[in-house]
Structure formats: C-alpha cells, structure tokens
Image 1 (cartoon, each protein chain N blue to C red):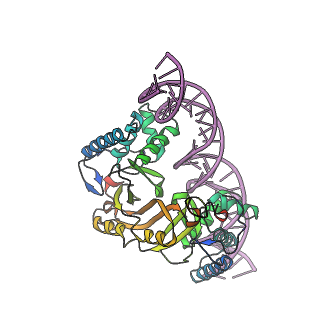
Image 2: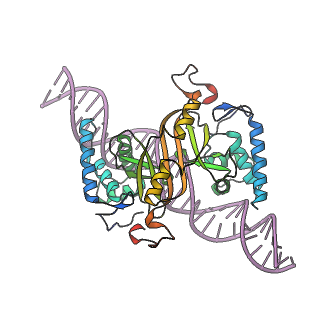
Image 3: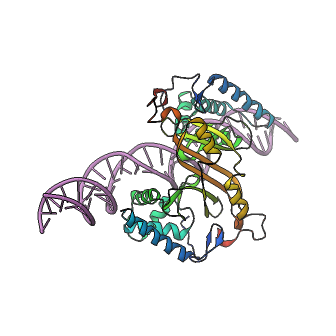
Length: 176
Length: 176
DNA sequence: TGCTAAATGTTATGCTATAACATATCAATC
DNA sequence: GATTGATATGTTATAGCATAACATTTAGCA
C-alpha cells in the first residue's frame, strides 16, 4: 500500500485515463470554496490529507495516509489521520470503503450523496458511481418495513478491466 | 454487545415477530443437510457458532461469538472464532456486516446469493433482503466499464421501526 | 483583552484479524 | 488394520484498524 505511484498524471479514474493533476486541483478548489460557504475550517492537515487521497486515487488505509503526513511533519500519531478522515468524510470530501477498511477521495464533492463503488481487489483502484440508494430494492424494503435509512454502504469487489486474468493484457504492470 | 437476550422466542426477524426457536432449528437442520450433500464438515464448533448467530439474530462481533464459545469450553483463542466464521461465511451460512465489523446468521441458506441488509444502529438487529446486485445500477456500471464483480456489499444503516425516536413507542426495551 | 470553541499534540489502550507452527482427527487406500 | 494425506483444532504471538482521554494551542468573537 505504501508503494510508489510513478504515474501522477493521466492515471486511472473510473478505470479510464484522465488529466489527473487537473482533477486533483479542481477538486481541491471546490472543497476550498465549499468550506468557505459552509464555515468549515480547511486546515493544512485536512487539505493535505484530501490532496493525498485525491492524488493516489485508490483506497488508502488510515495508517498509509498517516505515513505520508508524518513524512511531511504534519503529525505522527493515529488520531491525526483519523481526525482528518473524520472531517473529510463528514464533509463528503472522502468516503470510507468498508470492504477494505480504507479511504478514498470523493469525485463528486459536497453533495449529500449515496455513493456506490467498484473496487478492484488486485490494484485497489476504485471507481465511484452515484446511486439513488433509497430508490432501489433496499429503499423498497426499507419503506415497506418502516426502516429509516441514514447511510448506505454499496460496494462491489472484483477485478477492473486492467486486472482481468483471462484478458489479452494479463497483469498490467500499471495495475499492481 | 455481550448482553443478555431474555427473549429467545418470538423476537425480531426482519423487524417483525416470528417463532424464533423454530427458525433456528430449521435453519440448523437445513445447514446440516447442505453439509452432507456438499461433503462439508459441520463440526461441533461450527454448528454451535451458527446456532449462536441464529439465536442472537443480530450482528455479533467475532470476539462476542468467541466469548460464548469460550464459556462453553469450545475454544479461547481468536482463530477459533475466525475459523468458524470463515467456514460459515464461505458456506453461505453467515454473512459479515462490513459496516459493523460483525457477523450474522443467514436466513436463506446455501444459495450463492447477493444479500442486502437493513441494519439498525440502535439495537443492532439486522434484516436480510435478497437483491440481484448484478442487475441494479452497480451492475450497469460494471458491465459498461468491463469490471467483473465477484462479491457485493450492500448495507443500509439506520433505525428500525422499533427504534424510531419520534415514534409512539420510543426506545422499545426489546430493542436495546 | 479575555472568553469560548475548535483544532491539534500526545499517550495509552482497545478492538479486529491473521500468521505461523504444533497437534489431533478423519477418511481413503493399500 | 496400518499408512498416508488432507483437514480441523490448539496455541502463541503479532499485525492492522480505531478511539478514549487529557493537555495544549489556535482562531474567532464579545
């Protein structure tokens, strides 16, 4: 998990190439604006934590995040990472991937949304999709039984296109 | 979590009353049959572990399960519980609730299914529903991007009918 | 300035899960 | 019935994830 990621630009997002530097910067800018509008404090630790998650663009453990922050002198003890992650997830800037006990920067800032994730168990890359969770079958059952949904966890674990074993491009090096 | 559960019969399943003793026994019997048919070893530890999960009928931590097994002389070290849970989840007799790091007995034995859960964060009772996960929005996105789903986690956290704060029956004692 | 609330620093600890290796059990085959 | 191989269990130790609790600092505001 704490490995090098040579491709800082044009790496995978939602399993297809994109201008990654731009997406990180614009998302950070939007987060900044959102915090001003909502009187949230986007402190250096919180900002850098989000930046790290966005740069990696895959699920990162709290201790992986902490290791990076520690290297940069932003804090060494676990609560540093967990507080930053609490802030980011509360604000909707990041999500926890329950199936991996890991965290990922959010592609659709600010909205109070019900994200769904496709998680590659080989390369740990994550694609985020929006769902209307309260609409699907789960919502039907909830309404029928009188259950009030406050939060949903919707995750699919499997293999992304680049990590398919039977594929032509078996074991893509950029995906390991 | 390690609390007493006085109501062994007629407690909540899917948030409505049912003959709980019967559901435990019949599920155990079906598990037994399934193991014979599939040449799986339904050892005393595994059987009792499933029985405990079915009796509780709510999410139980691995160490909670271990505590019960330990009291009965069936093992004291964590691997005892985790091995039993591995067996039960592999066989489809139990599921892990990722959002709680806890486990629950399965209501629909044996089938290779994609369960969805409604989880009450107040009383930890869990209702299991079946979904065709590969059919919903997640399946659409997966097919569109060439992602191969091997396992899905679909959970809704919230309050069950009995634990609604605004309700007439605030804080039902059977649900705490 | 002084007050208050929020953020950060720090230590310690608890919960969740597995690695690794020894021993025992069971079933199939010779 | 003995051998063998696979599976299950016993046991110790440790790794990985997360938070409690309290001290200190910082930022915003009366």
